[in-house]
Image (cartoon, rainbow, N blue to C red):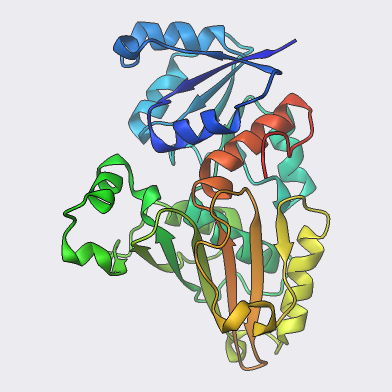
Length: 314
């Protein structure tokens, strides 16, 4: 029997990508709100409460409002906004982090899908902190390059315009006030004692990202090799369907270049450890619209449905 699914905010980038990943599936029934009613509070409330699962692809305030509309105790919410990611009552939608994370997703009625940058960051830092490899007090700095698709409809239109300004041809740093919206979950989920410093960069390509974290060995409690760091990551993800820990060294990168769009269109994630015993660079490559958004949301749905988590995903 097909489960009933409603996407609140289905016209946004994440909502549209979720719909794409549902193509060809006969185990779900999509509840479609009419275009002229999609912002009507009562109509949205009706669809939410008629569903088995509702995806929230909305701004934070609207996502919080949508949750308040739930009256049917059987409705299960999968929220792609930032509104509930640090709420301990919600499952954090990154099942590969631990069996406990996976089980909470499976049994929960409320799941918060990680942010795209946060997914890359947490994929590397959570295992290292939880295993005691990286001290919780370590002064973590991260930088990341991303395609413009994660910036919303207006930015996408600007980047894809025939007469786009010269500045959009260049990588652009932003969130220069050191207060990016993903920082709270980056700290809370990893268990870091201090807020990491984070430098995001958007560039002139559609989708895909690499999140990078430099590690200075002299600041660790004990000196570790890249191979030891890699082993800690591998032990976490060795049975994963979507997260792959690559061998250490630049030999696994063609021509010595790690492209940010190499996993565009997929739900996969690749982790790399470069460098030497003095200085290391950890990199997480993913699609900001895949494992960083709609792909992760569908993966959580599959787990919550009790079916193969790879259904509809590549």
